[in-house]
Length: 214
Image (cartoon, rainbow, N blue to C red):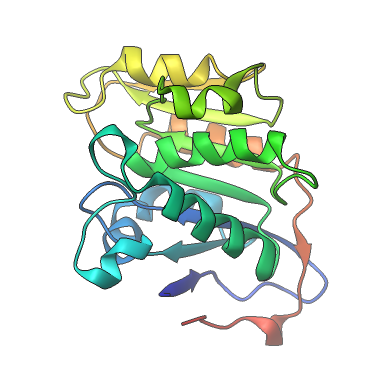
C-alpha cells in the first residue's frame, strides 16, 4: 500500500485535522497531490492530507472499481481496514470516482457497528450509486457532515449527478463553481472548505511527530 502524507510541521500542542484523500478513475495518489495544491494551500499547516493509491493500481489497473461497480467489494474491504487499523482519520476527501467512493464509505459508516471512525466527508465532482447492492447504504439520509463541490461546466460528472449525491446527506454544504472536472482554485470554494473544517477539533500533535508515511 502506498500512503503519502503532506503537511507542514505544526507547533507543539496544536491540533491537526487528518484527511484521507481518494483519487479519481485513472488517477493516483501522485496525480491527486498535484490536483489538490490550491485547496491544500488554503487549508494550511493545521491540516494533514494523506494520499493513497487504489488497491488495484498495484496490479496495473486504474480504478476503485469498473462498470457496474465491479470490484467495489474489494475496495470497500481495503478501505474499511485502512480506516480502522492505522492512525485515526478525521475525514475523507474524494475527487471524481474517489468522491463516489467517499459517499459509499459514508453509507458504510452508518450501517456498521461500531461506525467507521471518521467525522466528515468532502466530495468534489462526485456521483452516487443506484445499484441494488448499495440500497442498504442509503435507506435513510446520511447524517455525517458533508461538503459537495460541483462544476457547472463539468463534462465528465454532470452537475445533476453531483446533486443526486448531495441529496443522500442531511444538510449538505453544496459549493458550485463555473469550471469543469477539477478541484477548483476558486477562493470562494477553498475558503468555504477551510471554514467547514474549523468545526472539527482534529488530533493533538507535536512538531517532532511530523513525518512522511510510505
